[in-house]
Amino acid sequence: STQIVTFPLNQGKDIFVFATCGQEEWTEESWTTPGSVTELRELYRGFHPEARALLDACDDVLKSALYVRDPLESWTDGTSVLLGDAAHPMMPFMAQGAGMAIEDAVVLARCLGMFDEPAVALQTYQDTRLQRTSRIQRGSRSNEWLKVAGNGDWVYEYDAWRVPLESAAVRAGA
Image (cartoon, rainbow, N blue to C red; front, top):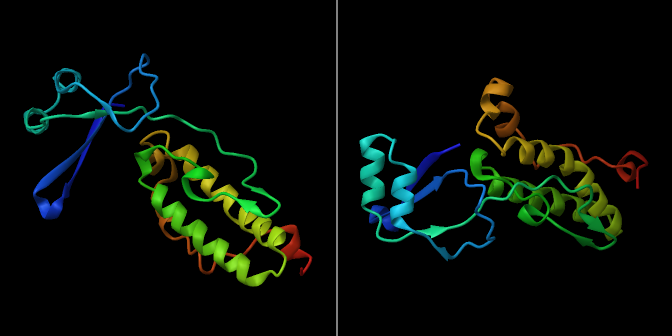
């Protein structure tokens, strides 16, 4: 979907513009590729005049692709583990990437504090987080998540400090 999201930077002195528009021919995976201001303005020519005025004020742009990634089946291998975008890279449409990384860190810290055996702690962390992050990762592919769920409570009411730790090790009392 084509959309524009903006937010202030430098105490409002600058405006960050995040404009998304599907382009099948764009394949370069980079965050620093120079883009074309003319191309950007052309892609949004049918938008509201205030949105076009915002784009007309842009001096230069960077162009990057958004890549859809499927949830991984496993984040851990013995005493190695992934978290945040390394474990579950998300599209930006739910604005939950950083939130999921923070939740991961809280649950990982809890697991490391609970278990003496690192492999058990890491497996428990993965087992606790995988279903939630996979659901949000899939939901981040579109801007429909509030329509499907009815509200955002399932996203925002999660408490990483209190969520039950899930794994065979926890159930066995390891």
